[in-house]
Amino acid sequence: MEKLIITVAPNGGLPTKDHNPGVPVTPEEIIEQGVACCEAGASVLHFHARDKDQKGCFDYEFTKKVLEGLRKRCDIIVQPTSGGWVDKEIRIQAADLKPDMMSLNVGSINFRGRVYINSPPDVDYLAEKMLQYGVKPEIECYDFSHVEAGIDLIDRGLIEKPALFNFVLGIKNTISYSPKHLINMIDMVPPGNLWNVIGIGRHQLNTQTLAIVLGGNCRVGLEDNLYYSHRVLATNPQLVERAVRLAKELQREVATPAEARKILGIKNS
Ligand code: ZN
Image (cartoon, rainbow, N blue to C red; front, side, top):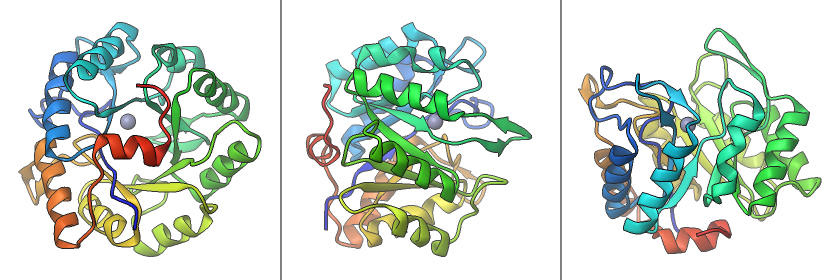
């Protein structure tokens, strides 16, 4: 079985320090936590820039600082988001910094009380920009149809193999958490590609365990889950450490960032 790639998503665009004081909201905090999570066993870091009020944003300089800061300190694969409620040009502007990866939303969904629109022309535009700058996309799948949309992008040459499909289970009005749903999504992934899974909230523990056993990859971190256990707040390094411990017990080796770069076919560095 291929080694396990652990992604850490330390902040997302929504949780603030009021929800959990461990949520990093400045470039310096993300860099510090990125280094600690890399040492703990994470090989990918997915993050969101924040403004001075801790709100998720697409501040180019913020992203640049995180990228440059992390590259000086460790070799973790850096993955800024391209997902948000703003124009496609703003969402993709950090691609010219040549980050290793970026997330790529490939379909629209009813999300947090409104429609999160990712129109086919916009998705193609984002994918083309990533291809142009050698950025590896992570295909975000909140629905079975998003897996199909990802396959279509591969077939049309807009995403190179091995593509990474990321299944997000447990957000309201999207696919709920269930091992059956996960297995059905895995079955849709064409051979020669990779998958990762996110479980929202308490499902994070279950989805990472299933990923370890089923040969996929997992994401942990405060973007998706603020708690270590019932009413006990987590820190990002703690969540990575737990994933590493689970992998050891289940006898699945954990990939280093260098190994993860090879498995994923990362071009930038
Ligand atoms: Zn995110």
